[in-house]
Length: 266
Image (cartoon, rainbow, N blue to C red; front, side, top):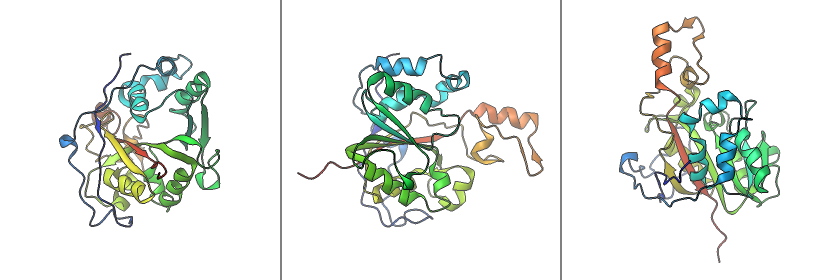
């Protein structure tokens, strides 16, 4: 696996207003993704990470998704390094990221901490985590008021300079999050402003996990696509032609973001 120069940008945004479920009113618009600078630092090869991704101990179904989820590139973009304390939020029963992060931590002298209920405890002492990973979860949290308390818990757990790493199904900009979240998608600007309001700085955005074929208009939301592939619900069943067309899309269009907890003032 070669060294990757990852496509993203360190983006400075104007201070956001108070977060609302309908989005960030009066906030400065984000620059269009195609207009972003493509300049990013190069990251050195990480043989331990390569080994963790390539390990045959990972479920075969997990490894089959690597071409669409780009684990090596994404973790490199987020800044994963040997010896870090990494907290993953709601890793799920399948543990797709856990099956990489946990053995990587064990092999490099780091620590992997899975957390399912952040407001009940982050599994680490305050100010000691190097990275908090959140994958495909904001759409759930936005529907029951968990976004703000969860982000506050992440901020407290991270050390100054620590990273909040986000992968999330991405809705089109300008839509109301209360309408898009039930389909599994939320606007990228909404996530960014929520994190900024919690005190985080947006350091970089990447199109590693973008998918232009995903129009987000699916009968059963994002779960219609791979890997869930829901094909029937509430009396509606996909035809064979519909199923094939949806499978051809692949996995969802996703934002990939790196936030940082500011360093303490001198």
